[in-house]
Length: 168
Image 1 (cartoon, helix red, strand yellow):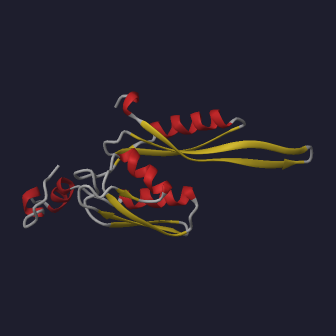
Image 2: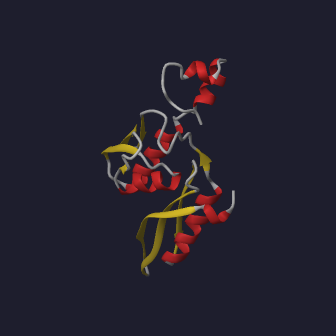
Image 3: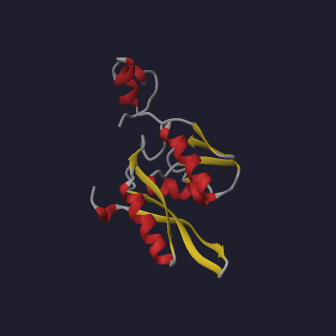
């Protein structure tokens, strides 16, 4: 995987304060989502005294910690639900041309993955980090048709028999 085809989305940059007896010490935390728009994604949090170096740290770490997600024809194979903390995210596969119907944090994840048609709903906490982690929890539950066929000892055609779905 080359570095040139990876896109980065800055989900949030926050100013955090540490109170000491000498006063307040300000620093920044940046939360970044990186993906190759071809089914791989990584997230990370970077902290520094300057916002630009916090973003750089988070970006480098997110690119190192990328993992693959099952994607089928620019959407997800089936509907799935993920949870993290008090946040719940529901992802639904959509037909071609629907677009990404998602809020800001979920949208960043979907665009980084290269998913162009999906419906989503975030329920509960609207904390951006928890929403992204709940989305990744949902995506981690996805399995490709070839993986399911291998687990069951069948062929891919037997798994998707009766459906007019193209196999990737």
